Image 1 (cartoon, rainbow, N blue to C red):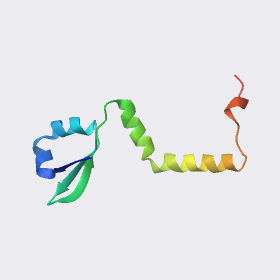
Image 2 (image 1 turned 90 degrees about the vertical axis):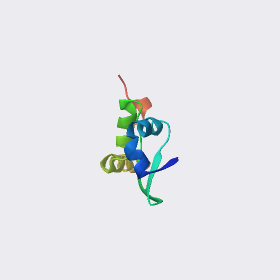
Image 3 (image 1 turned 135 degrees about the horizontal axis):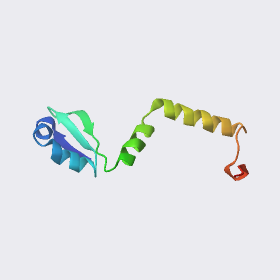
Length: 81
């Protein structure tokens, strides 16, 4: 993770967006963390990030896992075309 001052990011945002495609950029103000810049190479990367950080989606995944653990569900192998 690269650490950089807010004033530096403000003057060079395109450069830091390119860097953020490879690694997160921790933005600081007066030496204290104030944000993180995360870049995406593709739209798929963006969609993946959205799903990983969507609380509704994560709750549905957890509910599905509980259901499967309780024996309610269908194995993929049992689904016929």
